[in-house]
Every structure is written in structure tokens, then in C-alpha cells.
Image 1 (cartoon, rainbow, N blue to C red):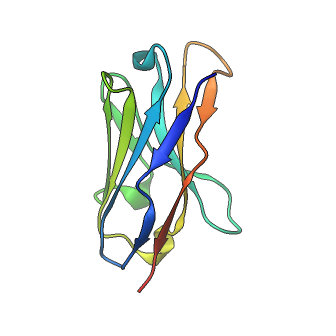
Image 2: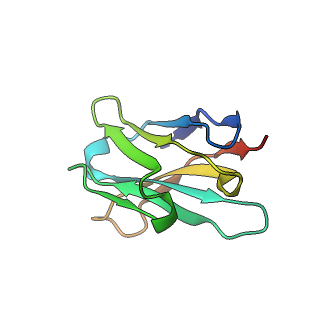
Image 3: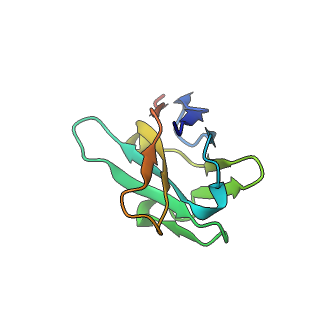
Length: 118
């Protein structure tokens, strides 16, 4: 059974930084597009960023310039560096793994809470 485990969330003041990590048990990690999504209270889950095995990245507009997604195929891990965090970034952040070659092959982590508050 595939597992995705997020870590690195917590409480940070506005303007601060956090680095989220997601480790996986995916056997052929390089075949997966990895992503981070987030869900704030009372809102729908939204895309934060994705990264392909070739390191092609895509970001939601509100995260561009502040967040950086990266991956380590050898470690089967994906990371999200978040800078200049603001209260509106408060949410549960979820790691996602999607195999574009296999419809429906999509895995989620359990989420990690990020709270931005003074």
C-alpha cells in the first residue's frame, strides 16, 4: 500500500518561512507527478504547486515567487519551501502523487497543518 507522509507544518508568524516535506513509499517514484494542495477551513482544496520527474514546475498564481516545490527522486520525496507566509496561507497542506499514464492512479497524504498568525 502506497503511503505519503507529510511533515514540517506548524505555527509561524506572518513573513516567516516553513519547509514541508513529503516522503513516499512509491516504488517507481520517477513516474509520478508530485504536488502540494491545501485546504483552508470552509474552503475547497486548491492546488499549490506540482513538479514532474523532469523538474517542470507549475504554481498557483498566488504562490508564485513565494513558494518553491522540489523533489528528490532518489529519496522518493517532495518538498515545499514557503517564504513570506501570510495569514491567508493558513491551511492543511496535502501531498499528492499522480501517475499520468494510469488514470485514477492518485495518492494523497494525511495532511500537515500550517498556521500563520502573530
